[in-house]
Length: 267
Image (cartoon, rainbow, N blue to C red; front, top):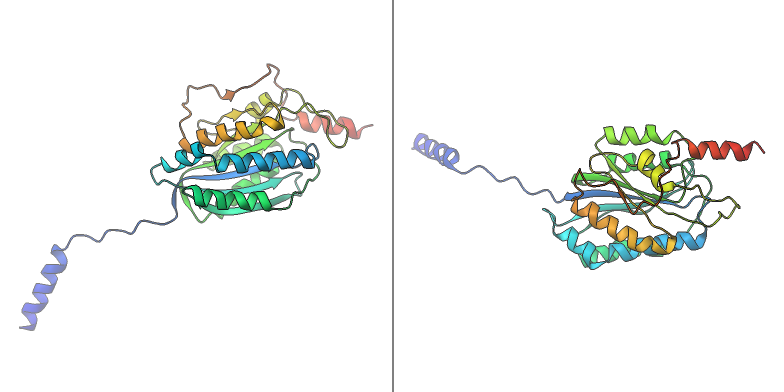
């Protein structure tokens, strides 16, 4: 009798359908790292305009619909601010956005954090920090995008192209949001011209990488909303122009920021 029961149990086990693996709660359509420039060229008013732009964009109905239209209907996002190679500060740690409530909660972390401004501009350091943030992400995304916004070239830390190439090799797409700012910095220095082409040539990288230009700080909210929708949807075709709203034809070298820095220090 025991033998018959054992045989019956074995038959039931073998004929049972295979167990379905549980869906992992951390699967998302996109892991998005937002890196925002608060270097010496950014005063407190401009830093506030950047913050406000992200808050408005992240809670925008079109952005939320883009998030919910993905395969998993959610993205993971984190937000940090950067300046020289010495300074990176996480403002809002990794969180999942899947609708209006979670978007507003994440945006509130950005809105209510104290605003700081620092010196120097290390885009290379920001990219390296972005890589670290992906390494410690608790989520698994179908795509990984690092979003760098700023109003000046790299002038501190390692070469920007080396950092960019390392990120691309790791499977990260870097998109850019250069801010065309005609105002002098709080230290009295004029902005570098043709920043849009600098970002295109030296900062962005990876499959489908692109820039969206903010023509002033007041234009930032529109630009970041447009950019987030494109990034979340992942629908920038390969044949599409890499620059959206680029404004100039001259291409500064990728070490232009260091050249400008050295010329100022020589006086």
